[in-house]
Amino acid sequence: TKMFRDLAVLILAIAALAAADLRSWILPLLALAALRRLWARPACPAEKTTLEKCDQPVESDGYEDPLRWCFLPSNGLKLANARHAEEFENELIRIKCVAMHRPTHETWRESTGDYPYSFHLKGRKRLWEIRLQMRFKKVPTSKLHFGIELEEKMPASAATRRMKEVLLKLVQGVVGDFYYAEGEGPEDVGPGEEMEPPTFVLPMWAFDQFEVSEPGQEPDITGDLEGIGMKRTDGLKAYIQSLKATVENFSEDKVYTFCIWGISQFLDCMRWEVRGLFPGMGFNFSRFGLQPPLKISIYEIPEEHDDPRHLVSRKLYYVSMAMWSTGQPPPPAKLQALLGEDSAVATATAKPQLFEWCTGRGAQPELFGDPLSWCTMPHRAMGA
Image (cartoon, rainbow, N blue to C red):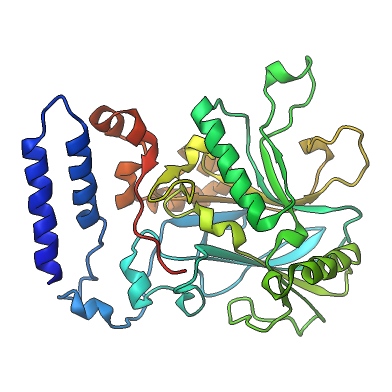
């Protein structure tokens, strides 16, 4: 029945294209959406011969996705959904990190569970989850911030600014407090003055789960953390009070585990899209100034300043990471600067993904006009 239904949709789409007045874009656009509904349903793995067989659980040993990241400075190229925690150490902190992401690049995996961490992510609203496990060598003396810092201010149209406002209101509804700055250009400051980079950061109590452990007794962050520590959903007021007390009393003799996923429902990092602004539509990160790679940092501003800007010169970075998708990778020169010798490996794995045709790259603007050059129509929402 699925095959006949898909065939009927295909026939209707072709008929709409054939019947459309060449001066009209509405019917071809509808036909395109119908065709994409077919094309967006990825095929079964090669060893599967029928759609029915795709409903059976399969092993995920051959899993590969487009998400890549590294610590800064780099100690090697990292993959999302690794079965182990990645580690990093500097003079301020020892840290372990696990980055989980649902397979939005191959949505058939959602029904089969054929992807890493499906035991935890499958059927949930969150698109991704980041888990950090930290032990301080130097205890912060002021508020820690966690989030995104961009290289430079990007020009934005009036429509893009409105979409940013919508996104920020949605995020505020999930996490509450945050710091956001559009960034500054040379025209915004005096000669020789430092410019604030575009910044979006959260306080540590915006994380969704945390646990404080004795060294050697910390949980395995690649495993099931159900029932470990506290969650925001356990009661927001009590959670924030407890986490604030923890943050204000950080110690070098404890191990701190933090998990964040609340804002993930809006940010599809594999497809490099913002979701949830309008039903059935996704918008390329680049429309919000989010050019690859994204720099994600934990930092403090130790000294008091009358000027509230988050200037780079004032920051003490505990850890920084860079993240990108091979569907929209950074320029080779940036990969070289990030990864050094590992950049050749990253470039070799930067294979274009099937979703790239609708992200505003290539020949799409000439084919379909400006509106579709910056919006996409993502797959049906998965999970609740």
